[in-house]
Image (tube, rainbow, N blue to C red; front, side, top):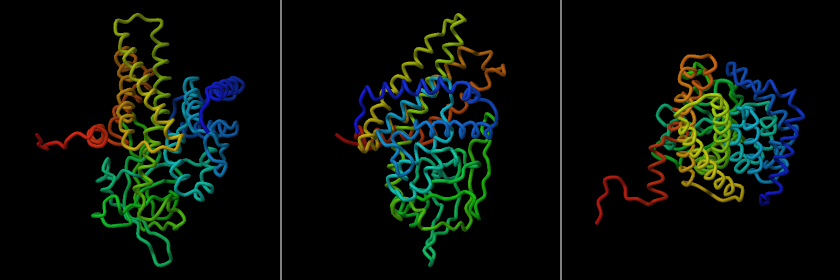
Length: 384
């Protein structure tokens, strides 16, 4: 099903009308304050409202509670949500990345577990990074061994997991082969985080919030039915998943950053500044990101494989987010540094510093673009 302008225009108009009708009921969800527990509670409430209205069911198959259609239309809804002053639900920043991979590679698993996540009843997280395996996923060491009864036993550690201390389930990679097998010995699976043998430790960010966590797995038993894709085929699933991390996730971050830039412009309308050009620079960064991510979303909706091209999306995203928050730090210096009103800007500024590292470091993305897109010679190579 292709996207028609009339479909998109009507959908956004209907969504705007629904938001207006529910203004009094949803107004408290515009509050961005409080600790992570409060944020997740607001996120779950908004998830349920969006699901009940059918808004976040667009683009998902009926088997998981969706109503079909292109996923790109759902992205337009989420952008509009952000521009109307609401936080995009925390639940979606993970679900929009891991959900499609579960649908594509484990449809029975998706039908059983995704509906509750789409309703906001469950929070999921993604377990890729380890102490010795960040951008190099093929170096991960968490092991997954099959027992005689067909179940698997997990041992190892994950770290830097978003919402890991609060999530109900984790979509994670584990090694079923040897370390020498690299990417050929990995398996993707869905694990309940209340399983015996799992210990979770929150990681405090510079902002003071504990959004990240590390997880320790000690002889954790996982049923074979929880495997996503094939045993030993986790690399292919991960590459499919990363397309959505660079596509749908990048779109949501773009929408959130655009809303924040609009907030900054609103604050500056009553003041005079000679540095307003930094706002224009941030706007151009976001425009470039939006154009690029739109192209990626259209390709994903058409079932195309975008692969290495998404490294461009990743670089544009980190640059745009940092530009927006640098503009706030420069234009609202006193408030940014000292006022309670600037606490949110400070928190987001700190988080934007990590944007060039998490999900694949900037240097790694430059290397992928050089090697796989531009076909440049390897560093140190000599030629005529």
